[in-house]
Amino acid sequence: MNLGVEFCGIKFKNPVFTASGTFNSGKEFESVVDLNSIGGIIVKGVSSTPWKGNPSPRIAETYGGMLNSVGLQNPGVDIFIKEDIPFLRQYDTKIIVNLAGRTISEYCEVVEKLGDADIDMLELNISCPNVKEGGVAFGIDPHMAELVTREVKKVARQPLIVKLSPNVTDITEIARAVEAGGADGISLINTLIGMKIDIHKRRTVLARKMGGFSGPAIKPVAVRMVYQVSKVTNLPIIGLGGIMTGEDAIEFMMAGASAIAVGTANLLNPRATMDILDGIKKYMNSYNMVDINEIVGIIE
Image 1: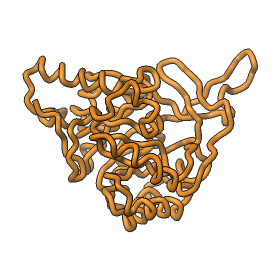
Image 2: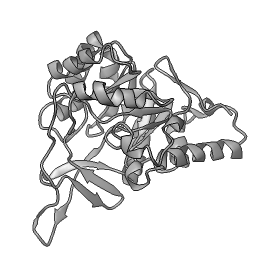
Image 3: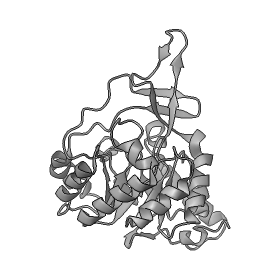
């Protein structure tokens, strides 16, 4: 049984990655998850300087998922390089760094600092709906998506994945734009935008009113968008959005994803990545599959 996949010229031992924002650098999961079993760890967003994030409350449970308005809180790239990379390099997994920025120059600054770092790939976050400046504007406008991709690609020394926002009318238009900008791969989808109101207190549950909606309820939207993007671009795709089981992962791969990322499920079940990998193996055994790559993009 071959679980190995190749993505942007890099070989991964299996297609199960962690999604940015839900696993940090894996330190919190070390005692319950075999980090060696994960194909790749996409770390929480890293910015050029420390970000405090949004005011509380910034997490809310909702039907079929959760809302978050964390705001990409992180200690900055210098601390990440000093502390997180050495920790992750203890394990047999690939390191993918999610990039956060409010401006093109901020994105480029963090990428330049990571130029000589011992990491495998970069993931450009142009789609987070929680930050007033940068995220939404870049992610929903084709011209800006292409521009930021092109400028970051100029200074990137590692392969560059661009993470797309689902909060657009036509996802294929944005996918074509980042491909034109020089992206090496695409990941999708990031969170939808949602809101929850406390009818007893008569105010929104989140301090910032709206936040990113994730979890199993968004999976049909994510599968549809992965399928659509796979038909209009030659770039490899990481599929994510509500993946809870191995069967969910298989669905994304049939739609056109070469790999998948697990997000909200990690917060419900710390061993989700391992359980999903086991579910993929079980599916392959049940259909006598030899190679996981056999099913990538088989839906016409």
